Image (tube, rainbow, N blue to C red):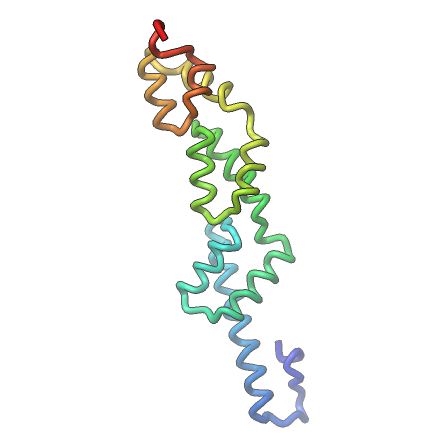
Length: 164
């Protein structure tokens, strides 16, 4: 940091150099805050910017920290989308619920669509969950609550009303 500011033993500390040191200190503080956020949980670039702003980090310093962490691979929205979608599907959530959760976490619609496409078919996931339900009605209700589409539920269970 001090080298980037041009600080050396024989260099005078004028107003301009002090401003540069202050900017570098703000960037270092923003980077430290961002690393602490990421140490708890992987977050999207948008969510990281929001968290930094809520902690009072200056916008320029926050942008610099996010860019540094993204270039280092610590912040990767595509990786996050795929990992979170896989985790949620393994915990029994349907595509609608997974998509809503990913968008809520600040991921772009394109990344959400890609992550959902990489999952096993929704109807096969629904069939696995339905196999553990005590009866057909309970299975329908559980799958509907978990964000499975009516088509996936019908593929897995058949129509709820046999006359339909």
